[in-house]
Each structure stands twice: as C-alpha cells, then as structure tokens.
Image 1: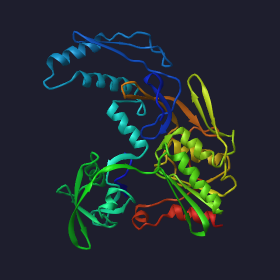
Image 2: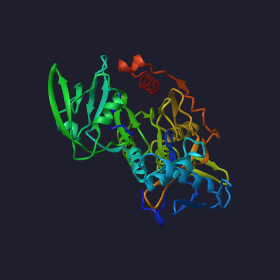
Image 3: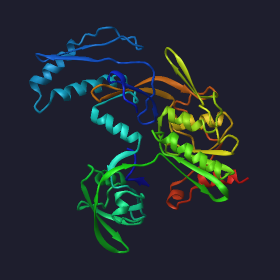
Image 4: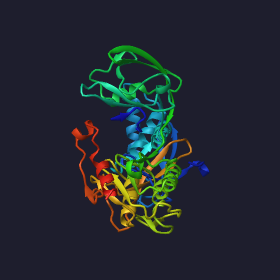
Length: 406
C-alpha cells in the first residue's frame, strides 16, 4: 500500500537556519558547526577557502588539481554544462567526500523537496494507492477534502490509465510519480468502476497530510499513528492526547511503524506527553560536546498503559520516542526490530536557499544505549507477513490491543 500522498521553520539570521533533524533516509540534527564555502570564478579557474572546524581540516587546501579537472572539462566536454551545474557538482562532491550516507548537499530545489517531504507537502490529487491481487493499480482511499475526492474518485476504483498511459505492469511508485505534478495542472485518470470505464480529469493542488491521526478503538483504547515527526506533530499529538484523556481511555497504542523520523523537537514534544518534566529523553554526544534533551512537561498521559508499535521502517526520531518511553517505563514495545539509526545530523539552510546536512554526533537512549546498526528490539516480537498484510490482518495491532485488554 502506497499513498499518492506519500512522503517521498523560522527565518534564519544571516541567511542560515539551523534545526535539529533526525531521519533514517535523510537525517539532520543541529550543533553549532558551520561549513563555510567561498567561491570565486574567473579566467576558467575556481578558488576555495575553508574555515577550520571539528574535522581538523587545514585552513587552506591546494585546489590546483580541481582547477586542472575544471579546465579539462571546460575545454573537452562534448555537451552543454553551465557554471551553476559545475558549482552544484562541486558542492555535492564535498559532501560525498565524507563517505557518509547521511551527509548531503541540497540545491535550493532539492532543499525545498526535502522540507516538503518532511512535512508531507507536495502537489498532487490526494489519494492512497495500492495494488489488488491482479496487480491493478487501485484506489485504497481518496483523502477527505482533496481533489481526488471532490472529482468523484472512490475507494476500489481501478486506475487503468494515467494521461493515456496504461498502468499495466506499472509499479505503485511509478503511478504516484505520474499522478503528481505542478499545482493547477490536470491529470486524466482512466478508471474502471464496477466493470464500467470512465475518465476523470482532476486538477492537482497542494496536498499536506497531517503527520498524526488518532481515534478510539473498541474497548476504549486510544490509537495514535505518527507517520513522520514534522512541524505539526507536537501540536497534533497533544490534541490527540487531550482527546484520549477526556474520553478516559484505558490504554493507548502509539503506531510508529514505517515512520522514518523527522525533527528532534517533535520527538521531545511527543515523549513529553508521558515523561515528567526534566527527565531525559535523549542524550546527544558529539566529538567536542554533549547535550541532553529533556521532557518539557505537561505529561498528561503518564500512568495510562501504553504500547508503542515499531518495525524495520521505524527510525531515528521514531526510535528516540520509542526508546525514551520504554526506558522511562511508560510504554511496552511490540512489533519487529526497528531500523537502527543512532547518528544525528545538522541541517543548515544557506543564504541562497541551498542546504548542507552533515553528521555531527550520535544519540543515546535514557538507558545509555546507542542503537546505530542495532535497532530497538521489542519486548514482544510479532511478525506481520505479506499474507497478513494482503488479508488486512494486522497481527501487530491485534497483539497491542490484546496486551492492553489484559
């Protein structure tokens, strides 16, 4: 099951924004470290200067061989290449020189896509897609209030064509990418409903999916699903907690499955709904300094039996939250071992809209463990097989409900 809505701060002084960010596929967390890159062009030569930082790099580097490569490229490349492409390539290369998968340079366009992805914001139609047993692309559900629903798209509709292209043999990801597009443009979907074919023209719009959804299950159990730790997570999680408290739920399930992470402050906000003010949520240790992040107070859910669901797609901020609630004896963990990302990055927005994301530290659970490459092993391991998923038999959720109903 894949959503067409799937995910792929404040203004900054002096053109730079620093924010705590932790994510498995693209993480980031802030310390006061700045990689300064000055560029001058002229007569076909590039010159760079650097400031010495935590890496121990020298104040000046010999870039003569870079000039040699640039001149050879400029004089011999059989193709079109702009100065901006060269500069972007060099900046990408500087980040890649670390051989660290979490250290990356983003152009302004890439930076926007990155931020939009964190906050589940993009341009599309707002529909969750999947595949049936015959490998047809189908609509799992149109999202209330967005273009797909308004245009009449319904659950179980088969999407046979997208802008005239057959979806036969097409992956869900490919279908999602073809359906997305610039706001205000139309996408034509050929659908089959009840054996009858029809065409819907749907105008794309900006889609922002909330990072937290909640409801009360049977037997008065509160269910909170967090799909990412985004700008809205703290506010939405607090609202859900207040609703649970008002309805006097007897237990709570926090579903962090397939949540790749997000902002550290959002993880602290969520953890603070259970953990008393001042208690440790996560300890960050860098090469030169350490910092502790503690609960902020307002722990309105403390004392309510809680289960946290995790799996191999739960990472970074998800693991921080799960680990903090477990180690402070506020939750039991059920599911499968989490991903295991225990390093943190600094995200810096530069003055031209580009960004540098660089690994600067490691984080540790309240029990002192770093989960890098280890993950968090649940108290109760429950598998969810492909057959279970296809049959919509959520064995992990059932196990959590059974645990809370004891």
